[in-house]
Image 1 (cartoon, rainbow, N blue to C red):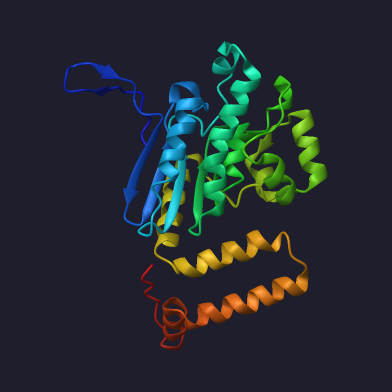
Image 2 (image 1 turned 90 degrees about the vertical axis):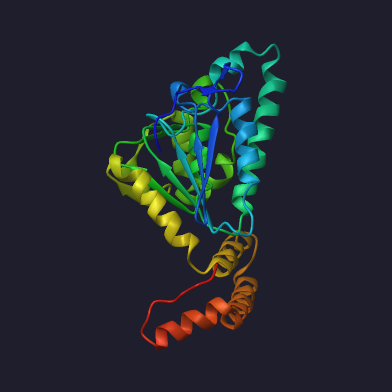
Length: 273
């Protein structure tokens, strides 16, 4: 995505700042890009509002969501200047986190794949957003840092729920409390990201994967996400029952029938989405 710091000219000749989030439908992919490059895509209330509005655009015609960041960084976290200017920082941050959490919860609950491309700095709430992705592509020189405790704050954006489950409680506590920087290769080995590519390949690889998944067996992806999401709360026997039910539904669905027929006929499946 292009680095956009331009303003949008209105018919009356006045100018307004570029939108904090760019949204584009590319086939069956809904591409969402954080667009405050001059501020490291730091999250303020307008960006949180725009992100929530963007996620609400996911409909039955969308097969995957792609999230990127404009400029040099994916997202450096919350906007500390906005925090500092607030007359009552406690209520303000509560309200901002609550607004951001609408998007986090909505993304986590989507039945379609969420692909995230990380580059540059990925701090605080930016790292929290990364934790929501189903497929996370990371640039080789990207640096991930929780950052909250370094300024006396605690995590938001779901970080305290997602990251202990991916990297383990002890490693997460160490990382969060010390404010250490996690490099791309370490993030990969800990399961925080799923792929590491050269920096100039992040957008292309994330876009390619989003397009590939968007044209795959959408309903089966949804059932997979439900199994994984609900499996956190189940014992093994309950999960086995849920798996048997889901694979039965999948086998009788148009996607399942097409997938098996394509395998037997030695051709690529043509899923309808």
